[in-house]
Image (cartoon, rainbow, N blue to C red; front, side, top):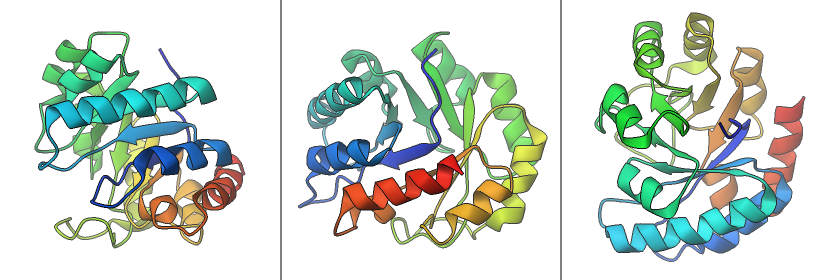
Length: 206
């Protein structure tokens, strides 16, 4: 199974974003996992084409490429796996779709949900929002480092903290037991995505 990295970039496919350019810069800065996430307005064809480009960049950099939500796109493009949230396919069903060798991540906000997701086949957990997120405005209240610690203590698989993760907040989440962090705005909205990724990679590496 491909490795589950410690610095995940979740793509921002909003209008005007140069996703391939940002991904290339982030990989050069030290991102080791890219999660291709697109909005509901993006067609499957567009998602497939974008995922193919990102996968090529990840392969060249030796990074893991995952596709959020659209598991059929992950399969079609040959990605390393996928990630499902609370409104996506159940984890057990997602595992059947992806097969036993793919990386499967699942979202879990509390210890009970975390244990259930792992029992159903999740290889890692995304937990959060750790802090208030500027990317999504419909998220539940932040769980903070204490919430991340509760999830990390409940399971044996890697826990990736997401939501409001910045250079200033990443350290507390790692100290709380997170295996790594996932970021969107901290890299995608940075004036220098490569530099932002490099600084985050240094923090994650400890």
